[in-house]
Length: 253
Image (cartoon, rainbow, N blue to C red; front, side, top):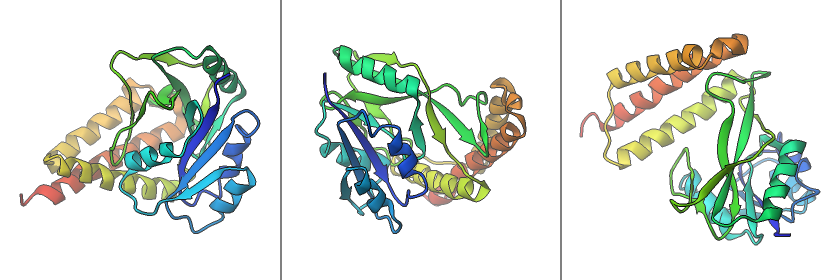
């Protein structure tokens, strides 16, 4: 049976970390955590679970931080998790089965089910949110994206979907959403500006409007109740903000 390492990048995750690790502690071979400068009890919690804990405060983006974390992994397979995620029992069995089969040239997508403001979001274009999170350590790795990082793997690789949900307990409240989305918008604008892209307020308006129409109507966000409506509005705001940020960065160039 090939070995499995859980890999995580964290910062100030004492609220969620233990609940996440509880879902993997009994069946993975290694837990590797790379911290970017926590000031809470994240490290103490991680060590209680026997995690290999490292620190890198020279933050250069999500992609590079994940690449660095993978260098500490020693298992045959790496399973990526965020602190606000939980592995369901069905997904655990699916992961173990995939690792036991050990198919060549394959990466695995996990279906993620997010809970927002106290409700699981099963529409709005959010579910199933398939994310590549499991692969052989020497076969793939994250890119260097500042934000919205993704796993890079050979073009001829097989991408296999696993069964069972990866529960994602994202935005706890409005403040949490606004702080988190502001960080993503800033990193997105920086990444686009560095690539020579320019933005306009009109782009912000049209993309924001398109975001709401797609999420709430085309992707049936109205079936997610009041949380679906709120999420569509907040996503509309976040979309406009990231284009406005890009415009401000590049308007005089």
